[in-house]
Length: 534
Image (cartoon, rainbow, N blue to C red; front, side, top):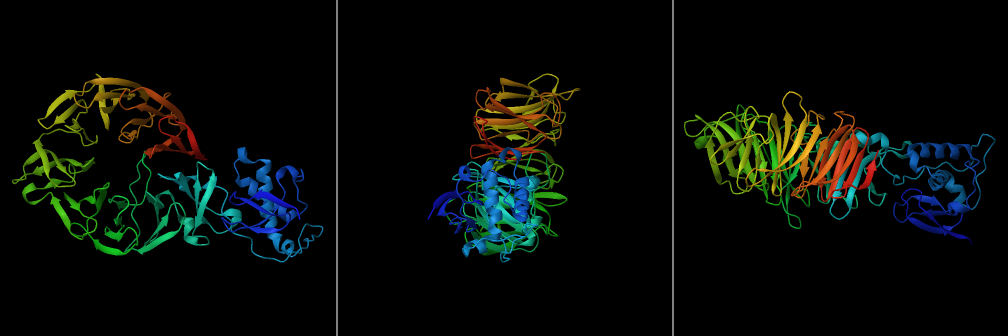
């Protein structure tokens, strides 16, 4: 008996079996015909069966051109042949008529793990970065016209991890904003239901029913949309996840079991709200209210707030100036109608975990467009005309680091405050690094072009050691690039063309970049491509 070793045509695992027999894959459980290695296979591209040849061509059309190798075709042939596996398993050969039709018994084809993400689903695909697995692509896939299912694909190893929700029609409606990943858990929304899956295995951990559909974050270029599912608890201990629904309710569930804990609303008349977790602190921040803004500190496990800021002795916070920025563990916000007599305007800073007020300082004419920043010793705001930096407490104003330029964004990274500037008149932008203690110029990263002109606050991202920003050297929105610099010294580490830029982020030592034509994962310090979905 001639025993051959061959790869599973569906998931790539090496299998052994007698040539011509049907073997069940121990990994994906697909039934595969054992075939000799590609080198011993016939060189003809035809199998002699019109139906099998048509299936092979359909499979090959789904594979990117650069991966249409002889081995890939052999795997495609092996998959197509499983349609007639019943005849082979019985020891006989399937006969065909002149049109290539087989007399083998009709049986449903296997439902294998897909070979990779479908390029046609790029817009609906996301990348989750696991500390143990690295980057994992989550994408819907419908192999050979079968019902869609959710595929998890290991980018580093270029092999599938698992499939879920096979044959469930709602999977077809999944988009990139239908997911949220926290550490080793994937949360998937299906209308008014939330499903929690294990990222490594695809095992379903729990399903929770909600009062309405899960809310998504707002659309904003530079940021990936996602589910509003927040986890403020440290790993390795019991925790609670918070889920915002589109009916403006906030639901809490046990992180491990999915057991419902409580549901609540905020403000009068079920006000809309924004919820943000303080990582590993077991505290979340909720801002809400109209026409005046409030800010509640909450313990996700409890149905009542720890404290409310705004109102009573705080006076009223106006909606137009009440946007709270969570910077580290500090809440920084502009307020007006503040104080016992509701007649003060200025900057309020308090600790998000303890609720203790750091300071309030009266100041006027601060920018409503530029997000503030916080260093260990100071808070920075752009002034209303964007020509100066207001530094508090004990407010002082310093001019823009580059004469004739307006302030557009701040980013604190290690010992440096990065400032995105735009030259007044031309709009050409540049990035400079300021000393976080003195705000003196440390280095100049140079001009970064005028595009994308609708990305400011998210133009720069950091992990504290490296800053990655988007630039357009030729001022062409379709020829953007990402540039990485060292946060302390400012020297350039790498640059990478991305085309029409949409978003980028840093996660666990990787850069995830989305453009109109690709979703690419790069190593943070080297800029080397780990994998891509195009």
